[in-house]
Amino acid sequence: MNFFNAFLGIFLNPKQTLKAVSEKPRWIEALIIILIAWALFSYITAPITQQDSIKVMEGNIKLKERVGEDQYNQMLENIKNPSPTSALFRPFIMAPFSLAIGLLFSCLIMFGMGRLISTEGKYIQVFSGFLTVSFIDKILGNAVRLLLILSKKSILETSTGLALFFPRLEVTSTAFIILTQVDIFQLWMFGVFSYALSYIFKVEFKKAAFISYGFWILKTLLYIALGLFSASLMK
Image (cartoon, helix red, strand yellow):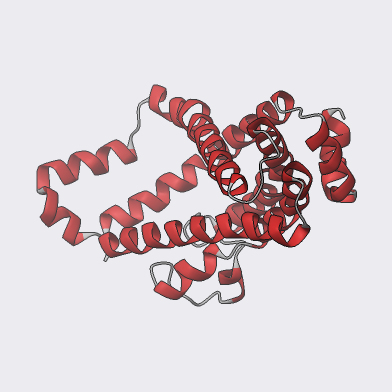
């Protein structure tokens, strides 16, 4: 199955698409497209991320006291006036590199979880299948997020999770941090990925869904913990 068919198929006929991808893993084209899309998303949103960071820094008295005034002023200056090299390095090198590492590691964990219930399947099948379902979150999901970010002029206030339905919540509140991690596109993606895992490990759909959503729960708890920790530093 070529890239174009896999891209359309994951939205129009995900079950058959993932069956084909599981039987004949193709990952290079998908990985390249996802990384390019992520780099462009990071580059377009960089100025808004910068303004969000400045707002957080300028209002963070505790951080100023913790690191000292000189270092605080230097940190703020670096955010306000990044070097041209840094402005390009972060979205086009660091962002896609970090995403690639995250994808590889996530698939390794899910492959290990699958190994607990089955001796079937290979890592490359999991990786290929996960890249294919990632079109849902990293292409369509980020397209929607980009529209919301450009509309709100803020990344911190933007969510495609349940927090979207509670616009008055403070971004540093525990409720916002938890609800924003229950992301609509992520739930969709991991639900569809259950089909791939059932084909790869040759297990029934319920067991595959347990692996897929089990990983999502672990990832979500980690991000909530990191979000709460970051919020505590902003107050």
